[in-house]
Image (cartoon, rainbow, N blue to C red; front, side):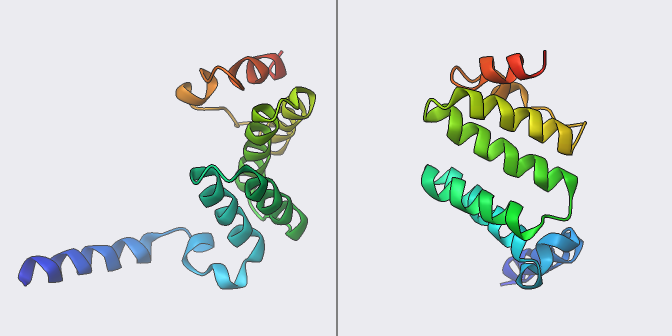
Length: 122
């Protein structure tokens, strides 16, 4: 019982330390839509990824990093559906939104969008 209480206390502490944008998404519909796009990506529901990322962008994401993430998700969807020019444009848009934008090593090495990402950096 004591271990459960300690675990719950730790979870409560982490929730208090979460970024402002993630603690109360009810008042931040753009960020909520982006989280939906990320969940849809994890579920491999690519039409939902595109819809949710588009909605997040339309609603006005506040953080340049979030804007870059929305573009990245759309790039992944476009590459997987063989829309390579649109994929490359999204990678460029991600970098325009956030000059620090880079894919992780694993993402950049992906056989579908990795080469398009590398091309977009030239």
